[in-house]
Length: 451
Image 1: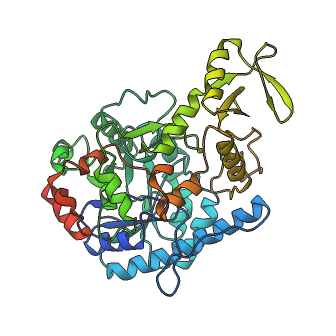
Image 2: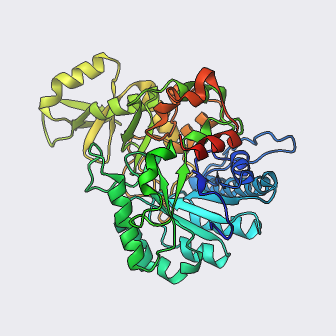
C-alpha cells in the first residue's frame, strides 16, 4: 500500500529539471507502479504540446524570483494533470521537490490547491523538510522524506513528523555514495569511503521501530539496478517492509523527453565516470557525470592561492591590490601562462584564477540570478534576507542555468548531468544491446524479472 492504493513496490525517482516529467510519471503509474514528476522548475506546454521557454527580463532579483515561482507552480500543475490523464487512474502519482529550492513551501501550497485528486504523494529531500509533514497532511497528501541516515530521520520525526504520522507514506533511504543528484553526506562522513548500505538501512529501521513505525516502508534509492542484487533485503525482519526506487534507469526510456545526446552519453559511460563532489551552489555533495564543465570546475579548485596580509606576490582585483601566499608564485605564473589571467575573490580568503571569458560568464550569471535556491553560494542569494552576507563564490556555478540547458538541447559536455554511480552499467547490461531504448512498461517488466 502506497499513498492509499495497492501498487507494485517500484518507484520512479524524481529528476529535475525537466527530466522526470508527466510523460515518464504517467507511464510508470499506468504500469501500476509509482510515477514521479519533478516540480523543480517544471516545464509548461503550449496548446501544441511544445515546451514554453522560461525567460526572465525583469531587472531585480526579487522580481525574477517571483517569476520563477510562477513558472514552477504553473508547470507543476500542468505536469500533475497530464500525468494523471496518462495514467488512466492507475498506480500513484508522486511529485518530487527539493526543500532548499527557492520558494518551496509557497510552491507546494499553491500546487496542492490547484491539483485536487491528481497528486497522491510528495517526495522531498535536499535539506531538512521540517514543515513538509504539516503542509502535505493539511491537503491529505502522503509525504515521503528523503534521508541518508537514521540520525536525520530521527531529527525530523521528533521535531515534526510525529505530529502528522497518518500521512507518512514511507521513508526514502538515499545512499549518499551511490545515488545521483544531491546527496546527504554529513561532514563526519568520508566521501571516499562508502559505508555498507545494509547496515545503514537496518539502523534506520531500528529508529523507525522505536517510533512504532514498523509498517512504514523504507524505499531504497541509489545503487539499485537488478533486484536480484538486493535479495537480502526482501522478507527480512531487520529491514522490514521495503520498496525500490529507480532514478537513473528511467532516463533511457521512450517516454523520457531528453534529447538523443543523453542516450549516447549514458551508453558511453564507464566505471568511475560519475563524480561525487561538493561543487553544487547548494553546499551539498552531489553526483554527476564527469562532463567537460565538471572537470573544469574541479580544476578550478586547484587554481587557488591564499590571500595574505603582505607579500611580494600580488594581483589587481577591481583596482585593488591583493597579496598572495609567496609559496604560490610558480603556480600563479603557470596558471597565467596557460591563459587563466583573471583573479577572482572567494568567500574563503583565497583567489581563484580563470580565463577572461570565464570571468565574464561568471559575473553575468551572478547578475542574472533568479533565486532558484533558498540560499546560493554562487550568487550569494538568500530568500530570507536577500543575501548570505558572503561574496559570491566563483568556484561553483549557476545550477538553474546549466540544468535547464542540459534538459533543453544544450551541449551536454558544457552542462551538468546528474546520474547515479551505476549509470556505467547501461553500456554492459545486455538489455540495452544494439542501442535498444525500452518503453517504461518494458523496463518495469525487466526490473520485475530481477535482473
